[in-house]
Image 1 (cartoon, rainbow, N blue to C red):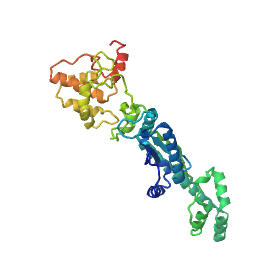
Image 2: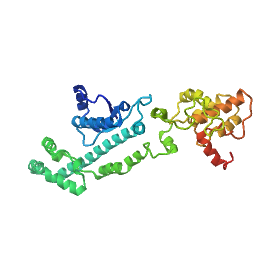
Image 3: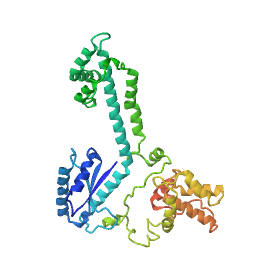
Image 4: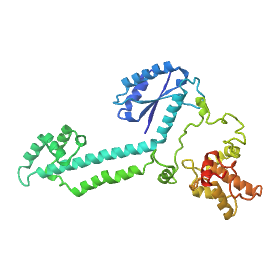
Length: 372
């Protein structure tokens, strides 16, 4: 579904072995992506020259009407050696991760496109066969008429194309098709059945568009995406989150290994618990970063708490009220369960601000009318 060619910024030559490998990929040029790696080891001016040289080399090697997509950067977890192009590298890495994330959709769309091509060709072939059958005499002169139709195949194609409003690209190659027709008898062809052609039309105009709507899209909201994916396991795409690689941090307190101050807006009392519970959360198999209601329910039931207590804990932990637990909501739920079981504390009527994940405090403030 995706073919990646990796080049180092200081070694762009395409060897005979690599060229032979690229030649094998003929016909799959739309799947090829290139990565110009270790680009942080050269300065901006050198990068411009190297990038141009790579495109020139690829243009001679790969026969494609479009310029290949080249991602530029340093594709590993270590910090950049030079920060001259840090912003560019960050955007390029983000684009690559996004392309990997939508790869399942691209693969499905490619298969649907191939199916559409086949249906259009089958429909066109049905019209051709039906037309040839209708032109044959009933009793005498069948062989003579067949030979005449074969010799006049360009006009036959032109007539069918205009009559049924078909695309020229859906017709078979005329010389090969004519040669194969000589081995058949037109009088033995079946007559065209319009009800079967209509089934193909319905597939193109109705069924396949509905199928496309069911595919995950970048326009989907989290709710519609979860509805499309159901509970099926999905592969995790390692989207980069360590901004320090590009010489910056996500917030003012991120560089402090001891976290934010207790009076800071980004302070979260459960930060250490979140780090500790990260592995156990991932072991539960979250889909798209969320635990399903059934999975989260089973985790809470294992605590042995009473149903009413679990109901209160769920209400407090499911902060955005979507019925799913993300990592932070899972941490809050485990914190409340531990407070009841280990420390004997009552379940609070509402969560203290320090316990609410910073990213969800706006939701709580909006729900409570800014009461915090």
